[in-house]
Image 1: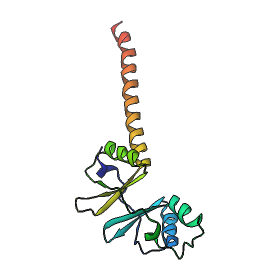
Image 2 (image 1 turned 90 degrees about the horizontal axis):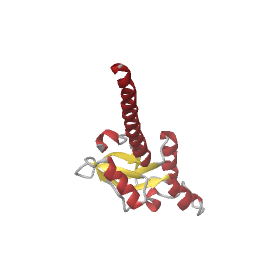
Image 3 (image 1 turned 30 degrees about the vertical axis):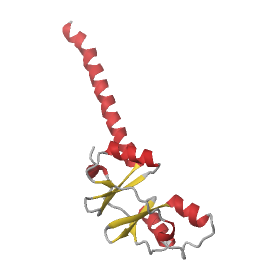
Image 4 (image 1 turned 135 degrees about the vertical axis):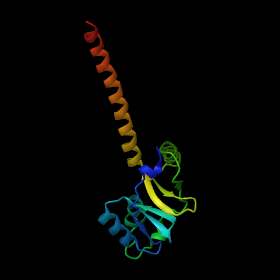
Length: 148
């Protein structure tokens, strides 16, 4: 399965200079669990909601005075739009991450693929396989009746 078909194209992005409060408000209004920090069209970091809790709230920092760049993850793992979903999921597992920005060959942000996207896609495939098995069983059950 191609990431181009599956990734969310509506990525919520912010400047690394934005405040954590601004980022959190964007997450809330867009109903997402992270923002991608960008320099122009190039991802430079990612900030999930969990990091806001652990790095700002739990340490007593002020979200309105803390820049995204101060707490975002900068050793960003990204995938090319031509990656296969299975390869992206393996990368998530190996790196222990839930979200991957999707980029083109020039590292321009095109979308994001999440663990939830993978679960949904694989669930649909498993449903299709189960349907094929059931269809085969139904046809086999009808075969003796057609012969008699």
